[in-house]
Image 1 (cartoon, rainbow, N blue to C red):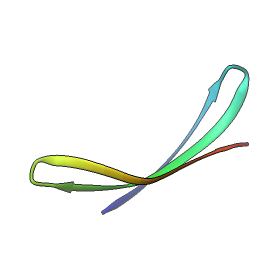
Image 2 (cartoon, rainbow, N blue to C red):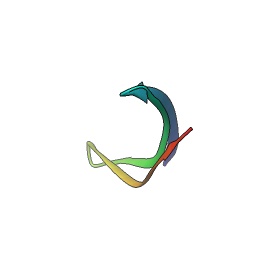
Image 3 (cartoon, helix red, strand yellow):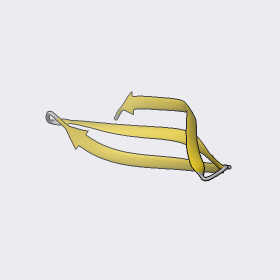
Length: 38
C-alpha cells in the first residue's frame, strides 16, 4: 500500500490531491481519493 500526494494548478487555481494505491495481481487499485483547493 502506498500513499500519494500531488499539487497542481488548473484554471488559475491551485489544488492538492491525495490517494491510497494498492498494487496487486499486476493491477493498481486507487481509493480514498481527496482533492482540496489550496
